[in-house]
Each structure stands twice: as C-alpha cells, then as structure tokens.
Length: 260
Image 1 (cartoon, one colour):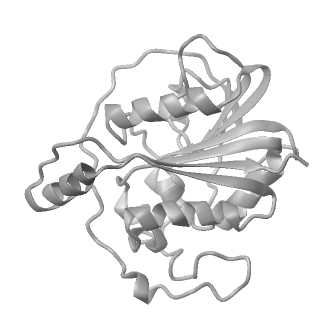
Image 2: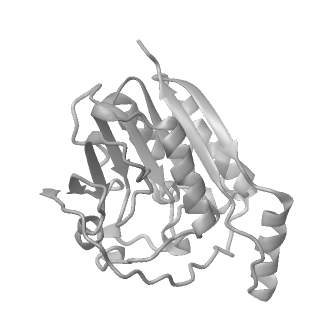
C-alpha cells in the first residue's frame, strides 16, 4: 500500500524508553552453519515471536533516543546524504520522524517504509509511504539500481533476516549509492533478536558491519562509534540506580555499493 502524506505539526509525548537488561550469552548462540549467513536460527529468535503487525498496531509518537543522539544523526545525514531534484531516498523501518536535515535542501522523492500508518502520516519529510513487515516480506518494492541512498535509524535490531534485507538494499541502490544504519543502546527488548541482545554494544556495531561486508555488492563499510567512557558508566548507573548522567551512545554504519 502506498500513500501520499502532507506535512503537519503535532504535540509529541516523550516517554522513557527502557534499556534492555536481559541478555542471551554469546557463547550459547553458536556459529551460522551455512555460508553466506551471519546469524544462527537461535539468534533470530525473540521473546515475543508474534507477528510484528500486532506489536506495532498502535502509534508511538515518541522519541526513541535523546536530543543529542538525534542531532548527531541529522549532522551525519547532512554530511553523507546526496541532495537535489534527481535524488531518491528510502527511509526504511521509519515512523513519524526521519531525522533528515531541515536546512532547505531538497530531494526528488523521499519514501518511507514502516509498520504504522498513523506514524508515517505524521512524518513531514516523507512524500510517500508504504506499509510492510520486513520480517514477513523480505523484498523491497523498487526496481534495481534506482535509489540514491537508504537509511535505517534505531530499528536494525528488529530484523530477523538482516542478510536478506541487506541484499535487497544492495539491489535497489544505484551504483555508488550508500546505506546509513544508526542505532543506540535502546530497544523494545521483546522484539529485538537474541543475536542483538546477546552482544555488547561494540559487538553490535561489528555485527551490522558484517551484514554489509558479507554482501558482495558493497564496496566499503565505515564504522562510526561516538561513544565515550561516560556512556558506559551512565548505562551501568541506569541499570543499578535508574539514573543516567550522559546522553545516548551513537553508533552508525555507512556502507557504499560498488560503483560498477
């Protein structure tokens, strides 16, 4: 389903988003037996295995990271995303905010793909949106070599089959196009895969990088880690005393498709 959306303004609630405190030890996850796969079947599991459409059937008009994290992502997009009338962007697994720069630059078309129509309708940066559960239908509804860039923010941990989605991103990107995946340490624990929850934050960055390095169509993969020791101490403080004294840690991967 495709829908055209118009910019609107909304009052935003900002509830506290919990940090996952339950982990599956990496030693229990094993190694993917099949060449080309990154995750084992155990790692693809979730505490809540019900279809995602039930979990996302009501809108969550809230931020899933703090203001500093959002500012860092918008700055990264300003530096790395192309712009102009011929540029086609896809914001994958998005909701009511895309974090794209609002400094007057324009794009030919911005398409969003997500799970909740109410959230997507409220996103002022989308020209069109499509509803699709990527864990059920793991193909993207675009022609090959057509998109200039793809972005995924704060959602990669919910993909049960990231290898297939990465291959699809490579297919739809134009030669030389890029995919930017960003995340922090927050999540909906019951819907994050065990392969994510069983890794440390540094290991998660390497895991996402491996998704792209495992795909032959990507040429380079840049890892961005803007954390400091204070982020680690703050996470420990929150887990023990429910008190955070610094912002959310910022991680990102910038993967570039081969030019030919």
